[in-house]
Structure formats: C-alpha cells, structure tokens
Amino acid sequence: MPEMTIEERIRKLGIAQRASTAPDAEKAEIAERAERLKEACRIAGGATVVARKIGMPMPTLNNYLGGRDMKASAMVRLAQAAGVSVEWLATGATTPTSNLHTNRDERLLVDVDAIAGAVASALARKLSV
Image 1 (cartoon, one colour):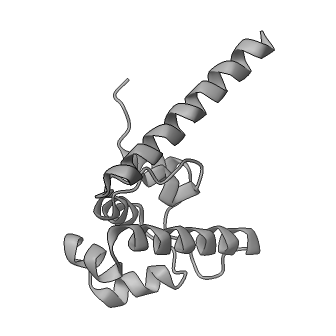
Image 2 (cartoon, helix red, strand yellow):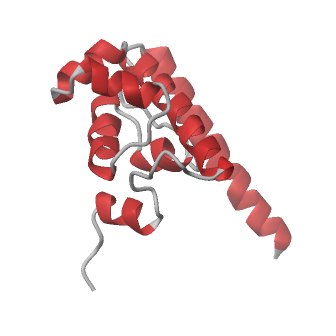
C-alpha cells in the first residue's frame, strides 16, 4: 500500500475547508489552528516573511490568521514556509519542531527537550512492564 501524502492524511483527518456554519466545536478547532498559525509565523520571523516565501497574498494569510479555515494544500505550504510540522499546525498534537533556530543555545535546548522526552517515555514503558 503506497504511503499517503501529508495532504491526503490531513483530508483523512477531516481538516478540509468547512462552511462558515460549522458547529461550535469545529469553530473552536479552527480558532486554535489560527493561534498555532500565529505562533508559526512568529517563529518564522513574521507573517510577511511566511507569505513571501510561498507567494501567498497577505489578505489571504490574514484571513487564516483571523480564523478562516484553511485548505489542506495551504496548510502544508504554510507549515513548510514557517518550518513547523504540518501535524502540529493542523492538530496541535505534536510540537512545532521548528528548524529555524539560528542560535546554537536554542538548538541545544530543543535537543535536550527531545532527549528528555524520549528518556521519560522509555522509563515510563520500562516501569509499566
């Protein structure tokens, strides 16, 4: 079975563009995604930087930042431009995993956090056996 693309995985999760009559839970999910997009833009150096990287008009990006639901293809492009994972932008289920760190100490902190998380998971598995 061929591996699904990121866009196919997002569609399968039901994160395609929805009508404005979305139920409250969906509206909350879209608002949370907009907050993650704001954070992604901040990490990347600003919304203008992200928009320029992918050739997206600022009014379109501003709509997404304001809470308009994104198409899967836009979500993928925005995540790539900001250097964050698509899964984090779409669901918040993972960490942003930005690759835009320019400061060596920041990179080390990210590495230490990742190692600490892996050690904690391994220890929890070992203790539950």
